Length: 316
Image (cartoon, rainbow, N blue to C red; front, side, top):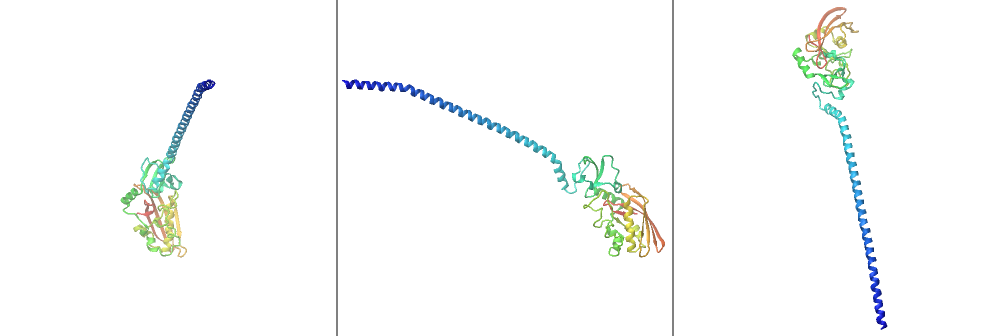
């Protein structure tokens, strides 16, 4: 009987403990679930924060790229003219027109034309100047901007010259070069390239340039032959030096004398006046007097004009 009562008491204690333990387990589970929910909410908040941060960073990157693109746009715009000028200058003899802008390389002082009268050009108006490129083309351009107002191309001048004077004279037409190039040259006509068209002549294309060009001279034709008919090669060398200096002086009434110390032959060369012909070519009227053995042998007059290549040629 005692054993039965003991067993019943033990059973009741076990049942009561289980009953007491069950609510605690539910509370523990609810607490765990709440913690899990809060963890999930925290993770979600962290994810949302990171996404917002990434979006902000992306926006900043987009703004930076736009600003960088704008900067590149400004830089490209600023460099467009330089690149265009460089492109144009590498295209050879490009034909510019009124309203075009000269490349920057031709807005340097060495391309400025200060002796515009010698080339038969009109006086540049205030704020403009004449510019010559490496191909002997002339441009009247604004000093401040390089915008072209007038264009005179070499081939157009060549055509006008041929129509007016029939031909272009070269050093092969020159009497001194033909007869005396292997003879004595005391005045340095050949060495100094005073004959038009010889290598090294200052009027040639390219090379060192100055605003005022000294042009060579070609003495050919019947008038050229008459100028030097009574002179030997030494005499002609001295005489050619006066032609060269006289035509290029630009001073009307200038007089140049020469004398050969070996035979006492002498001469006087005078440029009476300069003028521009109907086609705008610069011309000069001249006279020469020759004294041989102390006596005047001849007095010759004529006209020389400056060809499109810059060389003075006796045309009449």
